[in-house]
Image (cartoon, rainbow, N blue to C red; front, side, top):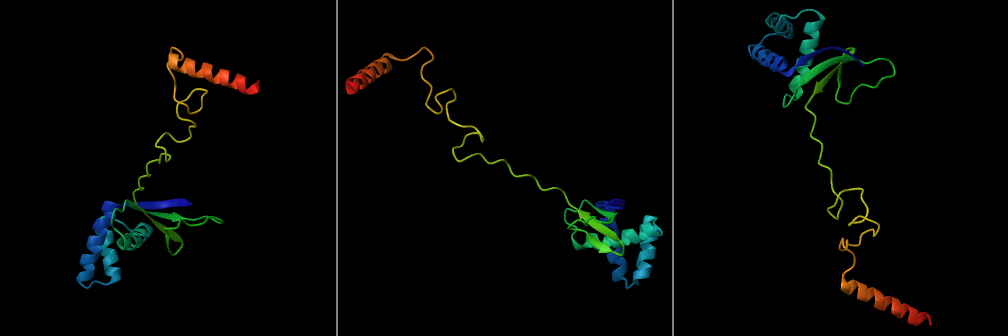
Length: 152
């Protein structure tokens, strides 16, 4: 795809106003094109591109940034929004939509992490940094004694 020329929105909006005013006066399309050429100091192919770009821009002027005039090479597909006039494609360009915010997982934590507390326990809450509490020591001792009793 090769860019031939482009027209910014402020110039296109001015051109649309002039074109509608001249059309309201009952001017012919040739007279309108000649008047636009004089006002915007365009001639030849550039004037032809501008008048075609006005038609493309007039379809949806809301939030229009620019209209690009491009040619498409062999084997290339034209853009989806492009309008073909003769051998050129006219592409209206609009501001990019903002990307949606990344969604967190259902637990409300950061995505992609496993477990909750970190460490080797894999999700168990962390204990005291100074070791086990006396209650935990007693529970562990009684559990090991019960296990020995069951084996015997």
